[in-house]
Amino acid sequence: MSQGNDRSVAFEVFFDGECPLCRREIEWLQRKDRGGKIKFIDIADSKFDAQKYGKTWEDFMSQMHGRFPDGTWVIGLDTFAVLYRTLNMGWLVAWTRWTWMRPFSDWGYRVFARNRLKWFGRKTGSCRVDGNCEVKLK
Image 1 (cartoon, rainbow, N blue to C red):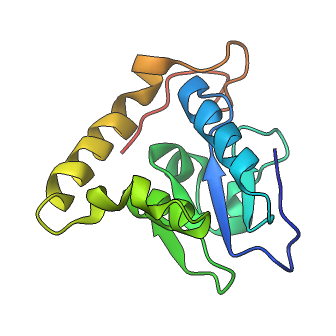
Image 2: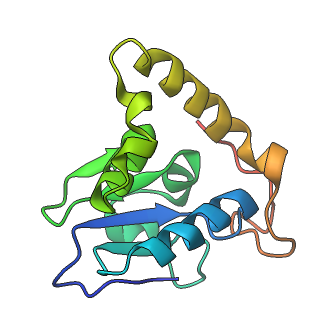
């Protein structure tokens, strides 16, 4: 699931295509990305190599990652803020970055990220860590 002409890409987003909830949101965002501004990179793809990006697969599994063309990384809820802003839908997630709300939304996202595999699972028979679906997340 990759999209976007590299010359026009404004942001790369790394997602777990085997997480049912994550995949649904990314598919919806891909439909919204009519201009090809986002490059969607599925970390569950067998060809994905985390080391190419100077990270581990566990790093990518622990929380959402995004990257600007200049190589600057964005991690966690900030990734969603940039992603949605890039697609002119920043208003949908703007509240998560409000000063008074940010500690709560960041905490909520960390809880979600830590538990998403337990709560939503992954597609069976496709785990990449030693063939074991149990991934220790930070």
